[in-house]
Image 1 (cartoon, rainbow, N blue to C red):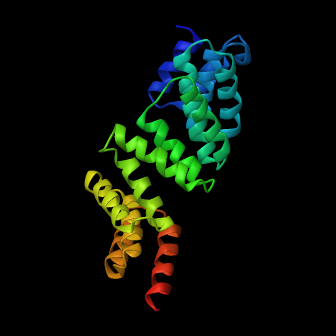
Image 2 (cartoon, rainbow, N blue to C red; image 1 turned 180 degrees about the horizontal axis):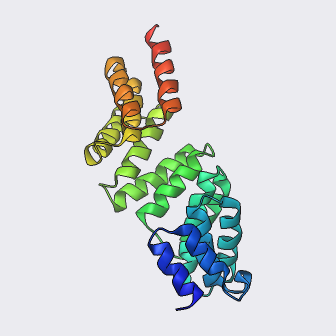
Image 3 (cartoon, rainbow, N blue to C red; image 1 turned 90 degrees about the vertical axis):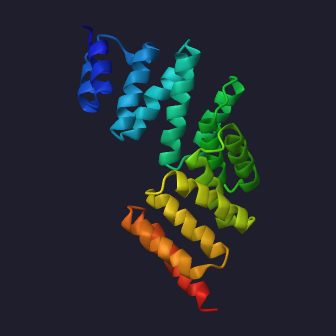
Length: 223
């Protein structure tokens, strides 16, 4: 078994540092080997060493001849860029994927998220809606669309409908409970919004976000 095969097996078993160590033992410069660069980029992504991940995934996307691996490299890059708040970088990678002829619910949903974080609200909603057309029961897309519409004050009743459906598909998801609370708030249903925020925090949603939303609800409920 080669170091690369060993590394791939270790990666598939969730042993990301061991996998990376095996790949680094390969007697070749990963910059000159797109497949090796791709595998190392995946390891660094799992280890949350994002600068190294970007370096190797960019090399893989630039030099590979496999369209599938180029697609995969760009998808992981878009994930890393979104995680590190380089939303323009994420948009760039996702648009290149679309230019190459790939379309999917995940691509449209990720692009919608990237665009919204650049204040491109109309474009964001358009891509999320296209994602939902491809998969009407995609909980992540439903939640994203509902939350963004609620946040932007666009058709609060429809936003609430999307959030309700997302939560019905994943009833234990704390982040979806937070979105539900925010949509209820936008619909003027303050008491229900508070209840969902409490449930969201107990279910593991971001405590800082929940508390920020609660402060805003308390502030507006006074008027």
